[in-house]
Length: 322
Image (cartoon, rainbow, N blue to C red; front, side, top):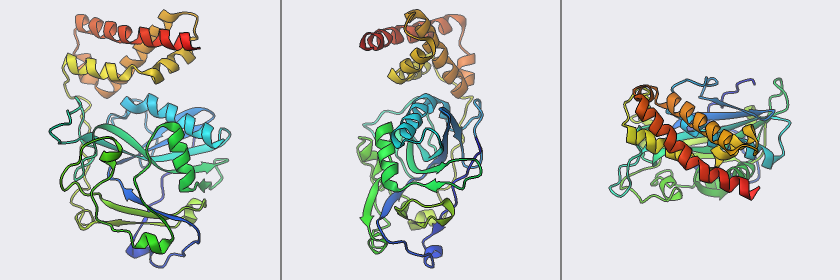
């Protein structure tokens, strides 16, 4: 599948000479994270960063920990939009990794994707745009934001907080400075002085990528580029057995059970259990290779038993519901 980077957006000052399409516009909170694009073609999901597809073992903020859930989300978004015969690019922001609130426990092994704004203790992916192309040569179309919202709802993911919807003049009047709205969307208590980066303002009309009219406005702190650095993901950090076990528990979920059933069928429950165990271990070892490689044989067996014990009731429940 051809990789297509998201086109760079103008700043507010550079956008003053742009044409102003009629119809609805949106002002969205500009999120501060690392871009993660999901590409779907012929039922296969690809993952990429800003400029290229990711290889399975690439270290990029522990993206493998979300790979299964985001794969399912991408496929559901494509089904909902009726685009199974197209090449679909879902552009989103990977964010989170720390939330320094006394009532919110940290997630083991997580590090903040970006500094300056706190969104959540764990990793999240927020969908902000969708490009659809019918061939590798086709320039494609950026979907309207209403279609992006529809796809996100069906896929069970968030879109950036909506600040305003209306005419371009109304969007121009929207305040740039505000506390970030995303933690509240995720059910988290607020933090003092946790300012949003700014706004993205764009026309809602579907249009070719090169003709999209959109621009960003940042608060002064971010225009000074004081918070633009990413925190490097440490794939070789050492986690305790308890922390690895906690991650295994997070990764044994209905989506993973459904994936294993699709591969193994429903005739042999223990084969499905084995597939879930293997799947969880692969993602853990890709995200935390040093921690997994440091396990002794007894700890490896304990981890395998833990995954199997969690998986069996979920598998029985899924089989009974079929």
